[in-house]
Every structure is written in structure tokens, then in C-alpha cells.
Amino acid sequence: MPAMSRPLISRRAEPLTGRAKVPGDKSISHRALMFGALAVGESRIEGLLEGDDVLRTAAAMRALGAEVEKQEDGSWRLWGRGVGGLMEPADLLDLGNSGTGARLMMGLVATHPFTTFFTGDASLRSRPMKRVSEPLSRMGAKFVTREGGRLPAAVVGTTNPVPITYELPVASAQVKSAILLAGLNTPGETTVIEREATRDHTELMLRHFGANVTTTVREDGARVVTVTGFPELTGRTVIVPADPSSAAFPLVAALVVPGSTVTLAGIGMNPLRTGLFQTLREMGADIRTDNPRIEGGEEVADLVVTSSALRGVDVPAERAPSMIDEYPILAVAASFAAGTTRMFGLSELRVKESDRFTATMNGLKACGVEVEAEGDTLIVHGKGSPPPGGATIAVNLDHRIAMSFLVMGMAAAQPVAVDDAEAVDTSFPGFVELMNGLGAVIENN
Image (cartoon, rainbow, N blue to C red):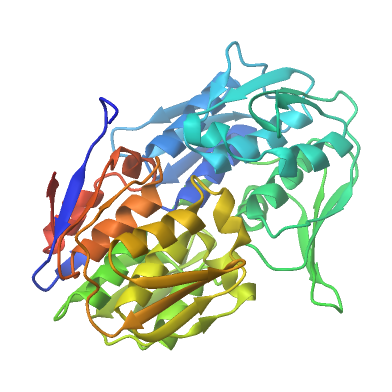
């Protein structure tokens, strides 16, 4: 076991109660830092997620020439360089565990006339980057990578970028965003076509900063997103809502721990991010929406969650883009449900921080859950009662696998341990403290 590992064990909890604020949305936090760095003048970010992934993006934007400072009141101030004004970094950019940071930043620098070197931790260095480098190469950038398009990588930006129209072969907000960001510093119109709608934080925030971004829907249902090059982005205030992907963990915990009622404040309710909430409601979850509002262009609401008897459902493949990060915790919820839950179309789950498909299936099996796979479909057979638990899960540097099985331990028949929760801080700093404050029993193992 590595010297820096952080093994934890989660024991059966009494009813979870209280009000909690989960950290800021990771996707929006990354983008706020990048777009603030491309804007002219000062931007202010409130509620920024201060997890390792986002702090790596902040450091990278400093290396590219932007001023990025945390203020005494907890907000962040950026002084941007304008579109096309980024500087060649003096050293390589280490994005840690962040696929979002790496892929979006490759788009940022691809149309700047300098070379940028990227690396990351062992998990990020194993993840595919060809899906980004292929369309960016069409725009004129050059890439030097390890075999399979993996990091470390050098991105040689082009001096004469060419606008493209690109149809995504796989639904990916990261790839869409990388192309749109490259298109900001490219003449004419750069267009991305997606057959399945993916999270649209990039489009919403680019408009907030002043870019001309249009979204239309073709007759066949495909979305056509176009950005016009060389906008003058102007510094803005961004209020980051609480992350729905992070809210998933206390939310499912409240559903499966009998007698629980938990309020989660200020959760981002972007319709392209709420597939998990929809699915859990179909399973019988008591999730009430309170105080819906708009903050910084994003839909936000408080969620009141009460423990519920869940039942198995079929989750269609077309819902995957709106909840791709939530399948491990959904699978945990399904292990408590009565009946079979089938989750279709999970190929993307195999190329996240770890092979989450296999990690989820193996973890469930270790905890005594009947689970199987048919191609890219994950099938969980719930008994309508707590699963046995009693296992130690190898998380392989994956924060969502770690948190998912710690949630299982809160209501399983026997405690569930994880071999290393160090990666949890990449997306949810304070996870253990927040959960224990609601009544969970998570401790060092």
C-alpha cells in the first residue's frame, strides 16, 4: 500500500439528518477559471470548488499568464489576457487527476502559437486523449503523445487555425468544449454536432462572458453548436452552484439509511446534469425540490431527501450523458432496491478516472451483490434489503468509486472499507466531515 494512502471504513449509520452544502460544481469551476483567463478585465468567482483538480487548473492558468488569486472573503479574482493572449508556459502543466482540465486546456492552447507540455497522475496518464487531439489536429495543431494518445503530451499550437465542423463520434462535453475553446481564437465559425445532448456549461458560460454561441436542433434531433471566432470576452462574476455529482453521495445515503431526512442546499439543476435525480425518482425516491432559482445563468434549487423504498428500473442509454459520473453511486442505490436495475450504454464509464464499469461491478460483487454485465449494460439484482457488505474495495485513485462504497457501508449489513480515499479531495474536499456531520460513521481503517 502506498505510503500516502488513506484507508477508511464506513459503518452502519443511525438516521442521517440536517442541512448540508456540498462543494461547488467541478465542471463549472474549471470553466470559470479558463474563461476568466480569456476575458479582458477582472472576473470574480464565488463558490469555486477548491479540490485538487480545480486548483491544478488555477495553477495552469497562472502559468499561461493570467492573474489568479484567492481573496480574503473566499472568492477568487482573475485578471484575464483576452482571447489569443495566453503566454507560453515556462514549465509543463501538471493537471493531476483532471481529465476535464487536461482536455479543455488542450483546446485552449491548440490555437495559440506556442508549445505546451501536459502531464498528470498515473490515472490521467492512462486516459485516452485521441478524442481531443484528432479534431484539434484538423484545426492545425500538432500533438506528440505516448502510445495510444496518452499523456505526457506536447501540444504544438498553430499560427493559422482553421475552423471545422465536427460531429462527435461519442457523446462528450469535454471534447465539445475543447473544440469550442479552440474556436474562440480561430477565424470564422467552428461547429460541433452532437447526436446526444451533453452538459452545456461551456455554451452557457461563454455567452455569459460575451461570446457568440448558437445552439440549434436538426430535424434528426442532433444539436448543432457554433462559436464565432475572436470575440471580446469581458470579465464577469460567476456564482458556482453546488455540484450535482457531489450531491449524489449524501443524497443516496439519505435514501438508503432508514429514517433519514437531509436537505442539500443550492444544487445545480441544469437539465443536462440531472439524470440521476430523474432515475432515482423513477425508482421511488422521495426527492423534493425547494426554492428553485437562477444563479449565474444556471438553474439552482435545494433538495430535500427522505429515506425511501427503492425498486429496480431500466435506465436508457440516452440518459448516460446527463449522469455519466453518477453510475457508480446509482449502482449502489440499485443494490438496496427491490428488483433488477439495468443501466444501458455505459461504454464511456470504462475510460474515466479508472475503468469505473469494472470497478463498480467488482466492488458490488465483493459486497455480496448479485451483478452482471452484458456488453456495455450493467445489471444489478437488488433484494429490497441491505446488501451484505463486509469488503475492502480497491479504488484505483478513483474518487467516485471511493465515495460510492463508503455510502454503501452506511446501510449495508456489515461495514465497507476502501483501501485509499486520498483521491476524494480531487472533487469533494471535506466529504468525510460533511457525511459524519449528518450522522454517518466513517473513520480511519
